[in-house]
Length: 149
Length: 149
Figure 1 (tube, each protein chain N blue to C red):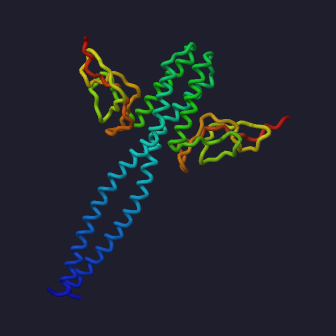
Figure 2: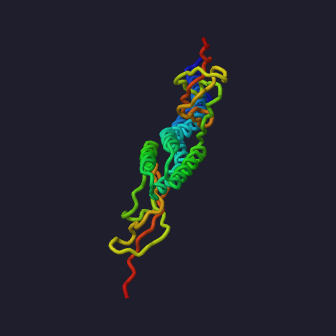
Figure 3: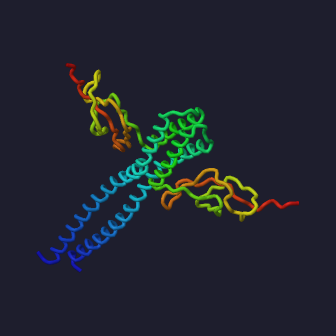
């Protein structure tokens, strides 16, 4: 094989490798772009979830001013809608089987009438962002009822 | 020039172009990655700004239940802190010169004692996200006072 033939082959091999590298980079860049968007949403939404919790607790306490109370309750409904519009979705927990990918068990309680391993109580609501977990729910999990002596 | 020499030169040219394209793509991908994070934050924050407005209006109306009112006012302060933590910053408008990059003029009003072109009133608060505008402020701009006959 002449030097020219060898050089040509080398250049062709380089070309193929470069194309493959480029294609891999393109795919990774597309994945990372989507990841960066979600990361931005997550960073913006996380601190706002505790604001939602606080407003919910305020509403749960009730008020002697029905007009003002209704204004705040309407704001809370708007808040939920805005969080959903931003991609966040509340997780249903109470009465569901404990799910370690969405729930954080903070205690257990012996419970009658529900299968052991069921979520008996929710102390903090969990949220998803698309398929990912934004914040786990903090829950109390049912265990076998204590035997009666 | 032999065919081999021509082929070799063509391959070398191709490789150079491919390298240049790859380098450009790499640079653009890095810029877009940074943009994607901001875009995610922007998409999450925008719908929440009107929730903040609504709660602010509810508070401005006042309440005959001081305890409940104070709970909601505390939530609003927490809300502002969470928006700031997420990167959003309210824009100061009233008393400042009209700035077309941050303000949207919805009306003018003849005003004494302030230079024409000053923001006289804010109807909707504006917000920045880092260096970018998240939402312009809607403002009323002062003009020369009407001449007295």
